[in-house]
Image (cartoon, rainbow, N blue to C red; front, side, top):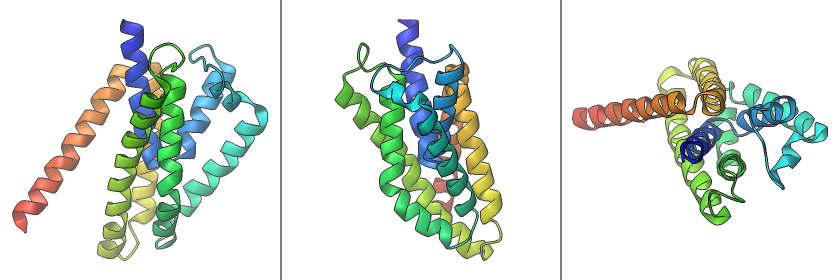
Length: 186
């Protein structure tokens, strides 16, 4: 029971981090599954541990991290990532929840799409505002914070799922609090 709950929390954390950066959480999962015993991926998700897939994810991660730092280009990237990030979230949710035994595959994929898609929607909505209010000067800083958050949540989701869950809950609370304050001012 505890292991199943831990897998579900891990799944939610990984798919949430995919909403910020599609390839970084996939890259982290692939490396951890390939080189440690901390994470076991069932077929067909064990394909992530292939050397070619890991190399491709490394290249895609570098591209996404760099492109996301450039004002205006980051907005174009967010539009392009509208399908990729939810798909990455679905893959991560399904792969980490051991869909073969614990959760129905369709439910896992839907949960991953919804979680990653929601995080992506918030990011894609906020980024143009950051660009407009700072003339793009804050974009590299905000992007770096997003990348670090994605990596930390991914790692914690695998290593200490309950801590990742608490961090996600605090993040949601901060976003809702900020949103309600901005609505109150308007």
